[in-house]
Length: 268
Image (cartoon, rainbow, N blue to C red; front, side, top):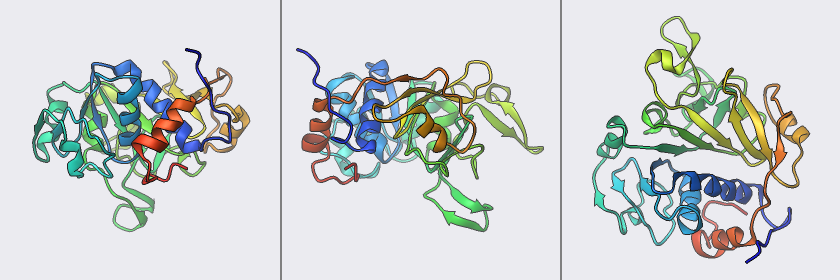
């Protein structure tokens, strides 16, 4: 059956971001992923329905192999226990990370920088006197350190996609070495993995093999590379970018009618 594509304007930027995230997760069918709160929960449910039905979902609050019939509104939601293989507690839900059993981590955040470092702790000021305090790390640092790779999902705005994060919650490719604060590769500090992909509301961004600096890999239909540059807080390379495959009508239908019919996550 021929694919039926939706046109730009028939879906929101958030829906495009979630749909492309679900597609990316087809790379992990049959693999184990530790899923963070927020839109990663939505995207993982879409992926389970049409792209990676054998993907095994873990959440840090202890649910393993979750298969919820309704969308959870947080990782504390008891709906995540439905159909799960077992229910542990917190922090037992993070134990598979330390045993090197998690193939990918899937997280969001408030800021991401050119090296894939993610901030979900505070914005502006310093740690003791921030301009805005955020939800905090929860298991995000564990995911960034111990997962074999990470996938990051968040809206693409200049204030959020920046040169360097206000606070490094989840380590990317280049991190500050304590106590001197110099930037070093994550491997120098004994960390495996690293971010493989940042999927934003404008496109799909990856990291250069040599410099580990973020570049635009694909831009969504209706978006231009210049728009990505204008909404990025550093001089991002868009020279290798191609247009992404359009969003499918069926992806939007599933999001709106089956996964989040009440629009809990404000995707549209």
